[in-house]
Image (cartoon, rainbow, N blue to C red; front, top):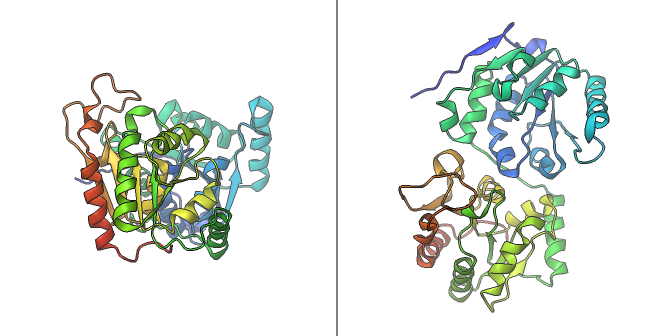
Length: 363
């Protein structure tokens, strides 16, 4: 059923009346990826306007890879935009840019307060977090819209503002310089020829309930190395080091652990070289899917209906149990949603995906 959202606003925003748009991006890698169809809809509708995305540094490269974004401004908090003085410094920077419209993909009241203080005439977004009074175009966030896939959550908001959708497809495409950087990382590891790269992301930001067992990741890696001659890479941030270390501790095979050793730009370019990516529900899962890399997504406590990978080469491994999705950080019972997913479940899925996609990736 089509969900129609209502907008409380002074007037409809017309393309000819808008020249300089600020989009407040989301703060997490996966969410940033899922906002890109909404950004594309803004670009399609306001084709003659400049589009700047305000984003935290750790997601900035997601927006930089979008062809629909002209510029990325960094919101450096922590950093120079920390505290009251930092907030007003950011407000001054935005005011100087003379934006005539702000579209807030982030839900927080802070986002609305900043663009209100910056004097941006048209301020649009969901009426979440009690911020509707700060917006000139407030989109009513209904119970129904909170149950759809996150792509549609953001896309339907901008469509309610009058934007024309350019579709739900997400495509990240690293440039030649990014691929060169990935090559340098591989050379530094002594890996000149890597015919079959397989990536794994055994970590997850939102607590252990999203994480499949490290010993099972290790067992799948062993089977892929033995069966396909694969080189398996473990990806993640500094915060994922415990997860990647745990995987390595359960195998004697030579896994390449890159957690915390590459920046997001390098990580994206390296994932683009993979033939397959196996991941918990995480930001890098969405990156791999958006790169067109065959992706196996392991879901337990979270809901694949709302946050599943969107790529047409993605496969979700999930077991229906009465208590899932619980959306809890830590399982309060027996973790059956993950325990029921076996090594063979994931390996056999991987084997099938590899045979169906013999030329995926550039590695």
